[in-house]
Amino acid sequence: MSSAFIVRPATAADHARIAVVWEDAVRATHDFLAEEDILFFRGFLPEIFGRLDVRVADRGGDIGGFVATAERHVEALFVAPALHGQGLGRKLLDHVIGDDPSTAWTVDVNEQNPGATRFYERYGFVQVGRSELDASGRPFPLLHLALRR
Image (cartoon, rainbow, N blue to C red; front, side):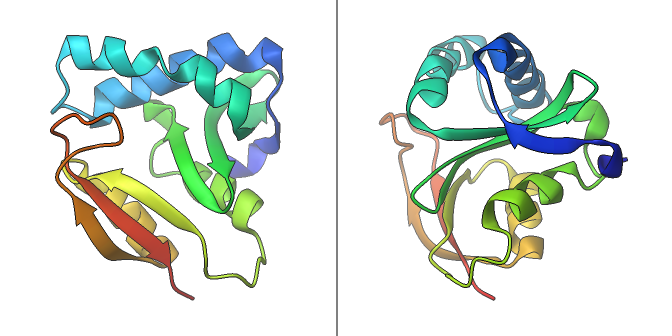
């Protein structure tokens, strides 16, 4: 249950555990990625730690998920597969978006990940665009979503 988790800023000591959550979640939800794609994207994790505001869901040192944001854009949100459907993703979004009256929050979602699209739509995001390529120029179409309250 997500209530046992606290959301706090990530520290350097969390990086290895965040990487495990990321990889486990990607392998569980991104079946359209080949092994070489996963390895390619894993190489971006240090960048996430370096330039983004990263928050983790922590339960006694166990990292159940994380969210990374920059300028009202959700760059990454991943939850350990065993915790999917328990409200942890919503808890992470609530923490970073909170009562922000702005509707300027955005997120890009892989089109081949319908579970993530449904998650964000239930939160109040709507599709406002689509790109054939991802941010790395790879052929993984992105849906561009914006928060509408």
